[in-house]
Length: 321
Image 1 (cartoon, rainbow, N blue to C red):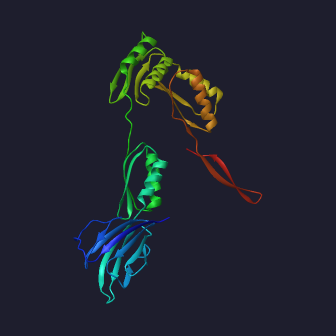
Image 2: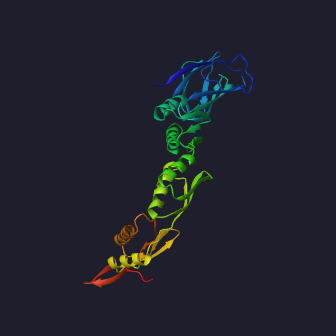
Image 3: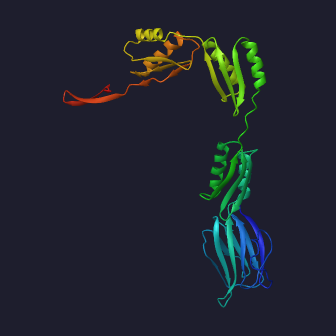
């Protein structure tokens, strides 16, 4: 349903050049003065003149359409966002006045839909020429994308985004509490804890790999995703014995293992994902609690073509290194 507003154009009164656009207010103009009328899409304005006119012209009826109600009244309908020009002519064919019409997106309805879809988000919306400008702060990038998509339905291809995402600051790391809990859990361990560049840094030596895992788990509970673990274990492991056990169970897999920085590093080119998973499980059972770094890769397969019974058949075979 269209909103109708009446704007009176009094040709006998003067309005300075450069007067601001008028929406739902009285508009006074004189001969030769160009005036701007702003209305929202799908809204209507009845323009009334004190002097009769003989002819009307509209530059772009796709933006605003007009209908003559009388020789003094014009019905103007905003159709699509954009700018166009309306001219009122006298019986002698002279231009009586020019009205620049600015049709904007229906920002009021857009704001209502925005509040319904994204309640609580501090988003500001305003029109600029024939587009919509969004500004303010939103809680996530997903909410920002939703607001832009909604605005695009009211001003397709004419949305300017000035919004920012409010990135929540992580909670402070309670390093003193971490030290106290760590000391109670491992009173004889020589572990140091400090803060550096917003991260919880733990360093020192522990007697077993299982204790390495315990300290790492505790540290993550105090600083999720912000732990720099420099701990090492004095426990030793027989890497050669572990490799022998792996090769007994999967004899055809070229597995290599090494102890690097307190972590078991596995490498080699496995024939399948199942074989790779088997090697990982064997290593975990042989050295429970030890960190394992998987550098194993899958062996690539090549394709050969052969002819069987007159038909060409493609067969997968291991690639030559």
